[in-house]
Length: 99
Image (cartoon, rainbow, N blue to C red; front, side, top):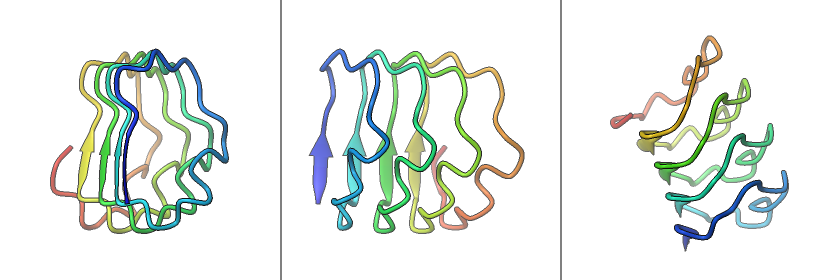
């Protein structure tokens, strides 16, 4: 299941927006105005292998935001305003090839 939500001027996302998309494998949220991600936003998306969050305004990522995404291979976070990342944020993402 693929979802492209690029270029929508999204400023925020509800925590449960993707919770029923358990087969979600590829998610694009590029070129929006996201400043943060809710904790647990990707918890039910265990099939997620590609996530693109380029060109937003992300400053921080919640601890454990990717912990259930053990199949995650590609994560793009370029052109954000990230200040620091929580310790061990990628510890469960052993398949991660592209960051």
